[in-house]
Image (cartoon, rainbow, N blue to C red; front, side, top):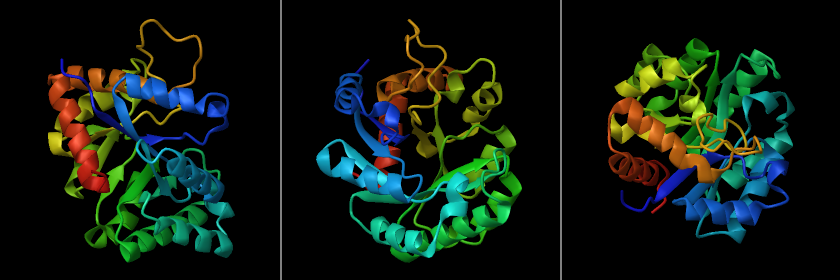
Length: 265
């Protein structure tokens, strides 16, 4: 197997669990073949913090800027102004994490939908792709996204955990699909393991969503339950098994796909 050159398209590196060893986490990632990473912006504060990290590690990091549906209720006019300015920075590769989450409902559906539409409008205006979140909101998500999809530069369904029918719909909308350690979970991941067979090679992306969703099939199991980017190869390996493809082919393809979608060469 050739040396890996992977891109983790989504990790929450601003999470406080990384405060004690963030630089070491990046070093371990590089040693595991994860050479570049995109930090997820989930609200105003974390989008700002992500950009600060990128400027400290410009060879390894880029980020997104946006507001997760959980925080939609907190999006003020002042926050929108800050985010819009952030979104236009060259180190920010995408708008988001944006979308709908009707599983937790930490924000009302109306607040979520308003924040989602605003971010899609921003992405259209500034010409950057969108980093999308959807959970238990498939029909509403598709309905809103459909209003903007033809005007968007590109889009990825981040941390996809859905069914074959859902992934086929997203592919019909010309989305990239982000696969996480969910695929490594023998308890919850079977529908995803089935669904990934339908995704064309040129539409696949991989991510850790660290510190969440640590692959359950790591051997030996780490003592800590914190996920980190050095575990991205475990996602790649499981994806290769589910699709009956070589690890090398998937590694090359997912990296090229990330470069194409985000314009990071």
